[in-house]
Image (cartoon, rainbow, N blue to C red):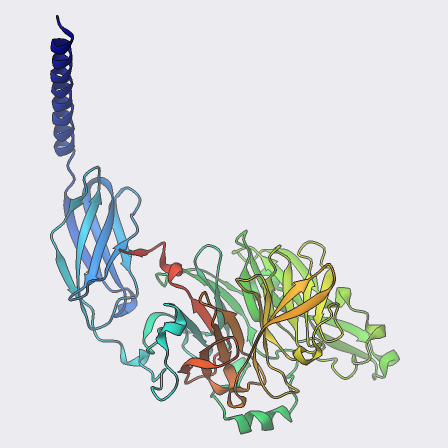
Length: 501
């Protein structure tokens, strides 16, 4: 047989085998076909901006939902579910009072699509409508870089809201029996909230004018053991609004710490790290006192999510009272630690407001590794000394950032410093000072956005702003309550729930 005939036969044989395999594939595919038994929709908590689609199949498979607002060219796709018979897909950040179209997609070698279906979101609830944005103020929407702003209401009912650039609430979580002082994001893509009883802190309810803030400075800036932002609980919430767990401090850590304050974070191991009130009983006679007294201080507590204590630290373990000239004057609140965060290496950063310093605490030994600020370990421009600062964090450039309340200069704003721990020099990188009308003597925050702008909160004035790195206001939100701080919600926060096609 010639080579040409042999080659032809081989081609025919190959085609025949291919047809047989293809036929077998189609036979297997159709004999194992999957049918959608039912599709049901409901809005969790009756929110107009969220819809759950519940899909039941007759055989196990993975699904996703493709959806889009009617008339829009932008489409979204939910993240594929694990294989199963019943699936709940959460559609988040929907526009209210809008018609949406969607298809259920069964994930297979060749995906199976349902017919195009429709649902209608209702109007926003009246109790979620607020005049967050004043059109007379700067409104450069691009300055937010596509993200949202997270705010917390510490009154009843307590809530966490995510607001977009035009002042619409796009996400919301409410707790009826307690306020929410502050919230932040965890390494596992959830939200961690500090809960506190409103009756414990009756100041700072409403935004104030600059003149009122300046008059208030004449009053004592510290208020004793409960102090600012005292909390009694912690909760973790996922992006769908489900509360995963809640710790009430009178039942946690053997009841030793009934009050937490100012900050709560989650480390990379899923442990809860918060600030506590740590007292010390001392005979104050050698220091000009009238005998035995209780000193008010601060500490760090690490727990698991059941409330079991794993590690603790007290400032009194590293402080020499005998060398402290201010111990009598500030005995009831000597340090006023008001912010907690993690350095790049996992050790703790705390803002020590009374000292006008940031301290780095070793997360294993409790040793103070360095102090930054006035009379600290770093040489820095003395004109950039901060005072009563808040919201310590390491920004995306790797620099240390604080919100400088600047009690003595009467101006506030974000400040970032590049730390050289070999030569012990702190170099100012960003100094975004706000206009005098946005001065806040207490609270506040500053965070670097992905586009290089800053999200800043002037808490006492009830203002949240996006500024450039000089402090120029590009976008402004007005709060009807005093926000302790404002955190940025990047678009990437939703990556585990939906994808923009």
